[in-house]
Length: 145
Image (tube, rainbow, N blue to C red; front, side):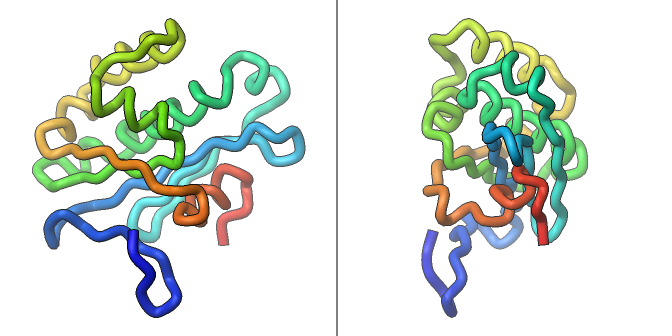
């Protein structure tokens, strides 16, 4: 990620690379999952019960998975770069395995989707710091603007 004209943006691997940002927030007042992909955003609010089901690490991984499910078929044949501020999520995707049972289950379900199969041949995953993820962060807190 580089600063350019005061804005932070990722450096695409090729001109036709699509960057898919995701984030999760588990604070009581603004809990949710969110993502931002080239001007489009999505948000899924989480109830108290939802937040109690999964640790924030798993929620971050679910948010990344939602990006794959929402855009996998559409971006088939294009380079896609998944960006997350959660290191465990990035490492899990890069290794293709996880230690935590919950994360293993999420990964297994995600890999079984046709959207993952469509996107995986040209898929890359990288970490970015939270400050460099403002759009997905805002979406995860229900405040995209």
